[in-house]
Image (cartoon, rainbow, N blue to C red; front, side, top):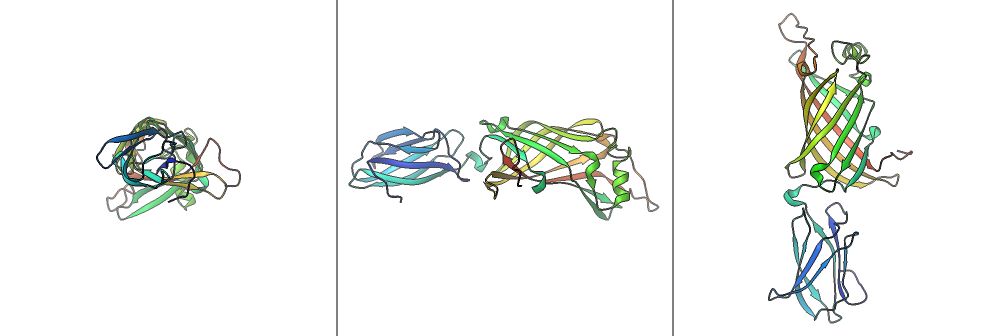
Length: 279
């Protein structure tokens, strides 16, 4: 319990990642269930009342739209003062997202990778080295948006000949279609800390609906004075959906490259519309 001066009740309402829950409502009842006090938190999530309460135990309930309520017992001292410290609220369903605002994908600390089956017995791993993106978290989180652009010619599988073939018209056709673009169209909760991002991917000159299975991994400060959020997402693509019909078959009758592609994204995003120069 933190030492305070004056009378009344003090509390700070936060998400589990430490962000203020704006306009949360704190209700105080005595042991008979009679409501004695109801106050709304400020924009910084702080509750501060001046009304003294008689010494004794009280029940405190903190509520906010979109969050599960939290209840605790407060012991008011003879001074008429009580400090609840930090009250942590969990988003309903256990689902959390970063604070509302614009977040910029940091390519230096993110990975856009793809895995394809090779000869039916192993996998080929590749990644794109040049990309960027923007995440806008809305107050109503289901209205949040994601956009990303990837340079097709930046594909890297660790084999120069194979990379050249992937850039050719058989696959990405990077000269005619230099950019892959993804734009979300909707966001829906899919479980604790998981979301389904509905969107459209334009690749090889073809636009198709593609859903991302998104996991939010948390938020924290970085060494450059900024705040970062981490995400992981996966998706399954079919080559034929994007007019990539190359299907060389080896002597054993097995397709050289599988018809499906697994996309794996590990993303760090920095709060704000620009990346820090030192990052």
